[in-house]
Amino acid sequence: MSEFDAIFVGAGHNSLACAAHLALKGWKTGIFERSPTIGGAVQTREFTLPGFRHDFGAMNLSLFAGSAFHRKYANELKAQGLEFAPVADCFASAFPDGRWFGVSNDLEKTATRMAAFSAADATTWRRLVAAFPGEAEHLFRLLGSPMSARALAGTAWNLWRKKGMSGALDTGRLLLSSPRAWLEENFESPHIRATLATWGMHLDFAPDIAGGAVFPYLESMANQSFGMVLGKGGADTIIRALSGMVTAAGGKIVTGAEVAEITVSAGKATGVRLASGETHTATRAVIAGVAPKALTGKLLPNGSGDAGFDTAMQKFRHAPGTMMIHLALDDLPDWRAGSELRQFAYVHLSPSLDAMSRTYQQAMAGMLPDEPVLVVGQPTAIDPSRAPEGKHVLWVQVRMLPAEITGDAAGRIAPARWDQVKDNYADRVLDIIETYAPGLRNKILGQAVFSPIDLERENPNLVGGDQVCGSHHLAQNFLFRPAHGYAGWNTPVGNLHLTGAATWPGAGTGAASGYMLAQQLGGR
Ligand SMILES: Cc1cc2nc3c(=O)[nH]c(=O)nc-3n(C[C@H](O)[C@H](O)[C@H](O)COP(=O)(O)OP(=O)(O)OC[C@H]3O[C@@H](n4cnc5c(N)ncnc54)[C@H](O)[C@@H]3O)c2cc1C
Image (cartoon, rainbow, N blue to C red):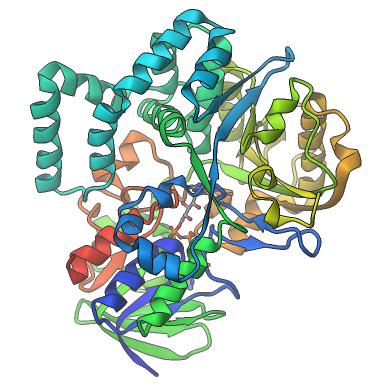
């Protein structure tokens, strides 16, 4: 048995960032991770063949690069080996009619491409990009602040002071809008609308869901203004750097150590019991980087003592699932729409707003989508060090999928468990890519498929393959993440805190949940 000031359940990047800050403040920190490797959804492993390094989950590290944690600890992270691979050609869409559109960090390039679809849209794009710094200030402040009345009042006051009542209402309206509403108000080309709307599908915002417009807006404007960032050698560069910071500051990280129970005495968390039976005590905090259902359903066998909180955690809603297909390739895909697509970090295959809406609806109804949204990541186009010389990896994210299959919208795959279905479904995905990039199959040297259930097996926070650990719809975001009254990473149990993607400000690699909690506990 060891005694710590703070014990962390799980070694996701939020927990690591929180632990690093606290350890540097002199706290004795211990992190217990059930998997043999740390990083949770941010890992890079050789899933296919030796020398081919695949990002298990997150590939785009722009949120981490732009985070408050990175701003504060850039030198320490760099000293621990953090290295980014900057991206100029960020994302593109290829369309069934053979056309493509892409956003590069060079405004002239993007605007010229856009003008080929619509001159009016290109003018709008330039206007939105010019106005972005004024809008970003408020949106990033909101997303980077705790969900407290004081912080919200400060953000609202600043917004009103800088933009006036009418401008402030415009920002509020953007936050409430659906992707379709924002896109149809601003752009006339269906190709441009579809290209931007796909960013909503990275979360669980199909085109018609309120509150989703801000994600396509922020991602496209930020990519245009700052480019994108991948990890040099793999996304796990942030995990190696964070864990290096923790251990350099005296923290302890233990892998293969599943936490079976958070121990509680007199209404306060006192430590953890591992599945092995080992116990460890925490004198100041237990910080659980887990999915809400696991907190009250598993780790607190007697509940939290507050029935309302326990019910809210059990009713926490997850988003549809994801399948990941990792390919080791002889060469990048030969995109029919144009060879320039080979240089983009992401190529989206999601033809229209209506197709995205239909896919989402199919997944919500338990059906295998006939035409899932595909996010084809080409990390070795940016960072060749992830594969042997001249070879490539492809990171294919399949959105959106049901956790439990009740049918197939294409009528070809009989409903069964994912383990029985995943190879057939991966074939459907490769067939779709082949229509946009003929000959892809001939380039495949190795393949690894993770169904939504495989994702959850790797990391139980990805419930049903939900890559964002909980729906981000308005009723479960902001003050309601993970539940009303608990957006401040608190729980009804004294000294017990929740961190990670299920908590404010949600999923992504920005480490914001962990870092804001760390500052709350240990000071700035
Ligand atoms: C396929 C996929 C693609 C993504 N792409 C991107 C992207 O490109 N860019 C981006 O910004 N974000 C992306 N995301 C989202 C982002 O990666 C996650 O939101 C983020 O990494 C979650 O971090 P976290 O700190 O909440 O913990 P997680 O990464 O979820 O880690 C939690 C850890 O806790 C461990 N754990 C759970 N229970 C226990 C227990 N009882 N005992 C011990 N350990 C336990 C788990 O094993 C895991 O290691 C993606 C996610 C996925 C899955």
